[in-house]
Each structure stands twice: as structure tokens, then as C-alpha cells.
Length: 384
Image 1 (cartoon, helix red, strand yellow):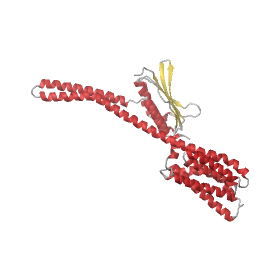
Image 2: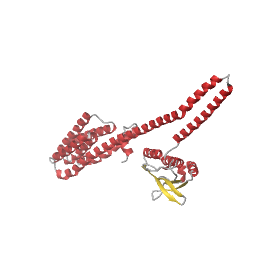
Image 3: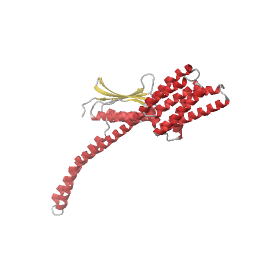
Image 4: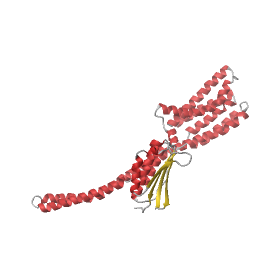
């Protein structure tokens, strides 16, 4: 179960289809109700007892589904959870004592409900308590030795497994919120840095332009030659300011490998593609880094949009070739394969890499999984 699955478990359904899928996922586990159903269908009880048994079983299942479905969509109040668990436990106890050991399986669902709804400090006490009560009640039924050993372990493991799933859901949601916060802080820091850089670049130039404009205005019309000199200075300062701004903006627009690696990891995860992406990248010259970053962005975009892949592996590997040291970027997926997966974007990508003295290779995926592999190599230079 990956991160996206945990988030979907915790996310309230927003459409009828999502609600139906969520309910179906919960109902799958009702398959273990086979023992009580079989007990009622065998016809060993009186008609009145059988009818009450069906009523009790339907009531138990309904309460269980409402509690688990509601809680996994939006946590219920602790008092409601306690009352509902008490109702489930009472129904399980009455039905087991009335109809026999085949109904002990109901306590497994009570334990699972406790794990799914109660805080960890309460669940670690209540789940063993439910299991112990199940054993005591089971000893008072007919043939407890045939059923009791088979439900003790599921009651314990099922309850604690759901507790673990709940903790994982909470952790995953907190992690995603932390990632969003970090991204927002990074964006804010970039905006502040841009503001500082533009202030440093333009503050002096604009002040000088304003001053010289005032001087030129005072010199006209009596001293036109000196005013023309001031205007020429204004033009010179303005042109230099324009060059400085263009250089600054170009630096901000230039993609970086660390940024594109983080973006690739996020994009692949959002598309439900299992990804292996390096955590960091070696420092290389700006032009080579920008070319590799553009290549990675193009490759990942096409994997997400066109490949139909379920897995993608990104690798950055320094290599020694006959032409000297290179940094090799490999993006491999297990999708449909074929060079058409990248469309016309591959042509522009090749031109970028050729401009920095690199090479681009494409081909089918390695191994038995097929797919598509893009390999980009750029010469290693000193990092600026």
C-alpha cells in the first residue's frame, strides 16, 4: 500500500463513485462472516431463533459499516465511538452465547473497529480486552476448541493492524502538509530573494536616473548641451539596468537539477507511478545543469502523460568516456514503449543537449518489463 493509497483512505469521498468504492473496500472484509451465515442456513435452530439471528447479524453488520465508513471519512466523536463499540460488543456477546461458537468471529470485527476508531493509547488496552472477553465467552459455548483458536490471533492482529494503518494515515497526511508548507516557505523565500535582488539592482540605477532627470529639467532651456549630457547618462544607466534585470530574470528562470528532481518525485507520485528518484544531484556547470534539468522535466512529463507506466526510475551517474567525464541522466519507465511516447518534444530536447556538447539516446526499457528509456549525457565542467 503506497502513500497515495493511504491518503485516499483518509480522504472523505466527494462523488458517488468514490463513496461506492470506499464502501465496497470495507464490505470486502465481510467475507469472514461466512461462519455465522452458514450456521443460520444449516437450519439447526428454531424458526424464531433463526429470524432473531438474522436480525442480530444484519444489525451488527449495519452498525459496523456505519462506524468504520463514517470514521474513515471523517473521525466521529470519541463518545459516539465508545457507545457504538459497546453496541457491537453487546451484539457479539448475545449472538455468540445464544447461537454458538460459530459466532465468535463477530468479536474480530469488534476488535478491528476498535483499532480503526480509538486512539492508540486506548486501543492497545481495549483490543486485548476484547480478545480476552471473547475467550471467556467462547469457553461457555459448544465446541469452543474448534473455533476459539482460529479467531484469537485474527482478533489481536486485526485490531492492531488497523491501529497501524490509522497511524500511517495520520503520518502520511502530516507529511503531505509538511511538504506543502516547505514548498510554500521556499516560494516565499524565492520571492523575498527576488525582491532583494531587484532592489539592489535597480535601487541605485533608478535613484541616479531620477537625479539626472531633475538636473536635465533644470538645465533646459538655458543649458541644452549640459542637459543633453545628462540625458545621455540617463540612457546609459537605463540600458545597464535593463541588462542587469535580464540577467537576474534569466537566473531565476533557469531550471536546476535539485528542483527538477523534487518536481519529478511529486509529479510521478501524484500520477500514481512508483518512482525511484535520486535525493540530490552533483554540482556541474550552469549550462549543462540547465540542459539536464530541461531533459528531466520533458522526460517525466511524457512518462506521466503518455507512457501508461506504473514504475519509473531516474538515475544520475557520473561516467568516464573516451571524450572525457560526463554526467549521465537515465529515465526509464515500464510503459508502452516506443519513441513516439516523447513526440516532437524529443527534437527540442536533443537540440538543447547538442548545444552543450552532450548526447541523447533512446530505446526500449531494459530487462523484461519493456517500456522506454531516455539517456542523456553532458560533459562535466567546473560548477559555477
